[in-house]
Length: 135
Image (cartoon, rainbow, N blue to C red; front, side):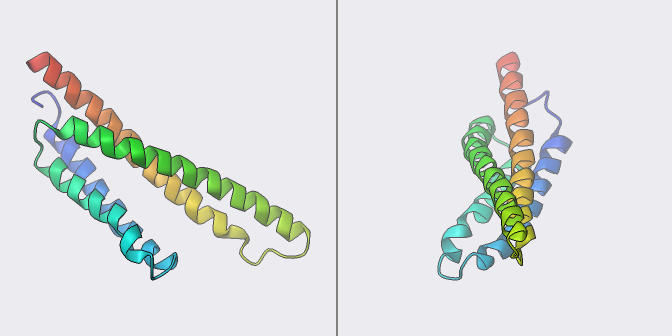
């Protein structure tokens, strides 16, 4: 990890904490009984942020494992958001449409999670390259 900037790693750690804090209120929106299950994602992001703040040799593997799953979830959220917006357009055409902008929530969430996953996967690649070059 000698060639990777510690400042960049710490910035990504702060981004993980910000994303986790912004996800926690959404866990209550989707139903109180499932909130403990949904809260596991933001809690794990805080754990990853801690591991980013104090990097170890296993950082690249942790980032890859975590953020491949996060990227899949982000893609599903984006698809769901687009489909919800299309359904809202059809509903508005038929005289409904009270919750027409609801699709923006999962779409935005998917884009934020996707950007975080992309940055983390890029960092994992840099870390694994630095490990390969150094050792």
